[in-house]
Length: 535
Image 1 (cartoon, rainbow, N blue to C red):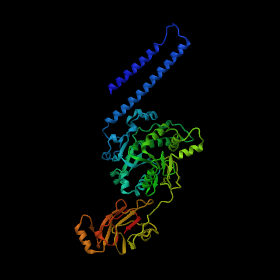
Image 2 (cartoon, rainbow, N blue to C red; image 1 turned 30 degrees about the vertical axis):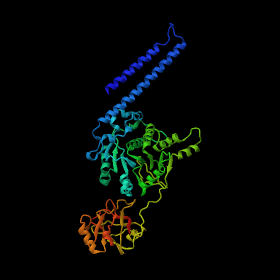
Image 3 (cartoon, helix red, strand yellow; image 1 turned 60 degrees about the vertical axis):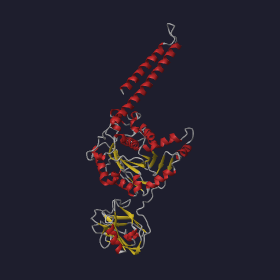
Image 4 (cartoon, helix red, strand yellow; image 1 turned 60 degrees about the horizontal axis):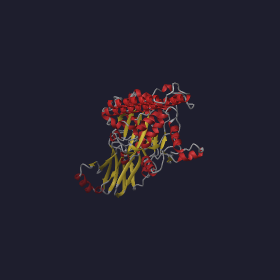
């Protein structure tokens, strides 16, 4: 590093000497210079000055880049600015994984010069994460401290609700806590880890935050576009939030989707988005839209994120983020000598809209203090609250008390969902078939998009084989696979995170009855939104 600096210094000295020699060596046989000679000398001086300035700028960029590379290479410890409520064991990423390459480029200092005083302020704090990469889709979910209430838990529950096991392995959700209060950041991470432990452990869910010096001093912002100073600060910070999150996510998957922390998602959204992106993969689009509201549901190819974020950072103090995105479209698509209609047509080629919308805004209290947000996506439509299946003829009964018209019979026949008052130990749901049948597969989904927390827990799925001797032999032969319940029933499965699904072995067939048995008192109501008994 010292040798490199010495070489560059020598280069500058030689360049300066050469420039001076070149100026002095110009024809000067006469004692006094004419006006023409003075003009030539002046131009040469300007040229030399411009060359020196250019070399100085290039040297500054090189030195800054090498400093950053040196810091990155020497970083062997995890980020330090982490609330004590989160154990350091949860930080699984090494610094080389946690620092996106874009953060090491010196251009960012031109747009945020205060960062020169705090070189570590581009290192993300990874509070929860397993370093997942190579997925098809990354969901970016920025969240901030709100005055009234937080919608984050409900948003994550909605996004996780309908995901299949294979979809969960092909997805990464990044919760970006856009605050520098370490206590608050740690409390959000603790909430996520407590409510979604399996998703955190598997690497599906990450929680990150910016260092305390990432944000500039917002007090010097000027009012513009008719916005108050508070609104200018809010939109400026949002631009910086989105930029940090996008840069962190840009090398973790193929597609990046920008969301917010107060939305609900339609069931099946992951497959719908992935299919639509694949269908349009060969086309030259900048983003795909899965909601018509603001920046919600905008999908980008991850290789475009560095360019997009550099534009956001360049003008982060000037306009809201959705306006800046439209300006990028204008630069890419519009001809300055054509009319507005031509521009609209060309921009439409670089963005494609999926209908109906897959995400709906539900937050009433905006992240901008004091603002009430009534905005709704009219193309979202009605949310499906239950799934209809054609089930075999059976007599259904339950010890649970259903709420209003949401009976078990209506749910079994595909007319409604089953919604019951709080279950207690030994409550049951029984499906007694009119005649013994061969069941190939079963699925019971509890909770729905509007009551996602009303799930069955510590509840088993049990079958009653019609052949008692076969039952005895099966239990005796494979005690580790099946456990005997009461009244001849055999336990074949259980609810995990609100879902019970599986196949039924041939050796248990035919089946006379199927039962859901509750083994402990619950503290919430229970809802069945999907009942499938496949024959």
